[in-house]
Image (cartoon, rainbow, N blue to C red; front, top):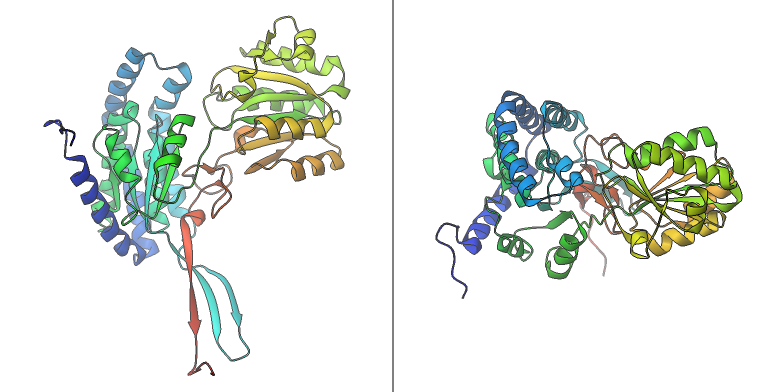
Amino acid sequence: MTAINKNEPDIQALMAEIGQNAKAAAHTLAQATSDTKNQALIGGAAALRANVAIIIAANNKDMAAAEQKGLTTAMLDRLKLDDARIEAMAKGLEDIAALDDPVGRILSKWDRPNGLEISRIATPLGVIGVIYESRPNVTADAGALCLKAGNASILRGGSESFHSSAAIHDCLVAGLKSAGLPQTAIQRIPTTDRAAVGELLNMSDTVDVIVPRGGKSLIERVTAESKVPLFKHLEGMCHTYVDQSADMEKARAIVVNAKMRRTGICGATETLLVDKASGGDVMKNLIGDLINAGCEVRGDQLAQDADARVVAASQDDWNTEYLDAIINVAGVDGVAGAVAHIGAHGSNHTDAILAEDEAAVATFLNGVDSAILMVNASTQFADGGEFGMGAEIGISTGKLHARGPVGVEQLTSFKYVVQGSGQTRPS
């Protein structure tokens, strides 16, 4: 047996206790009223606003350590908190509180010839484990979304955001306390020991679903090891295809926004595909706009011919989620070529077509098998908040139960209620 560092908790015992506490809290939350859950969320938002200085001080510790480790600019941007981002977290909690309660919704209802009335009713999933990396705001979003849907949550943020996540979690707990809900309804794993993740992935007796959101290595580990069902949040290998029928004024603005608005988010476009039939000036203008915006462009021969500043793309580049001011550019043979390229290199996250030709749009929508498809809009809209969900726990790229932004409705299951009036089943 591996010896446990005396300065670290007994991981197995710690995780077992967290799991049991979560299961008990989930039972309470399943019966909590909408007003009580909303009170906890509003209380959490108030606590965030009251503790801005404490949260920023904690974040400064994380930022200093991250810079010393040499984290990329994109990772540092994800980690950084300021007044505006903390206010956005607080507003996000209030937005979630304002949503309709997803629990108790009648999803479907029908009568049988024998008089039985059958209803399918939305219910909480139970206990949700969320494993994420450097974004501390996920602590607030994930905890709040799970709570609104009547679920207990176990949060495991990355070591980079350890102090930031702890400060945010304290605010969520303050909200729970103000509403009289169990403080264990939102738990944070209080150690950076990676063994805690391994334990969480095996807690099928107390955890109902795991939501991993992070890089490829995290997703691969969770997929390989988990005995708990998953909502997979794979990398965002997002594409934007510019068809020959595109309105070029719109397309030029969309392309720059899709890449450069925030390069470190999973909805940022990583590859630009341009219809060869559009002509050389179209690609030249799009590449020029990107370079002028501070983006490095890597491309195929057509892209290099269009602008001498384009660097030759390697085979690996077409499969790389840069999360940085770098983009791939390639010419393709119309919408069919775009569909083929995305099928070969995409991650089923978010892909966009810029086109005015309805037939081209229909071909793209039918041919690309991604969780989110955009038509004449930036891939940066791949976000639960932008979808009117208040926030999201991640973008599910799988096909079972939940797909696309995972908001409060996707964090519920259902049960059947059969109402009778004395019926018995004949032999």
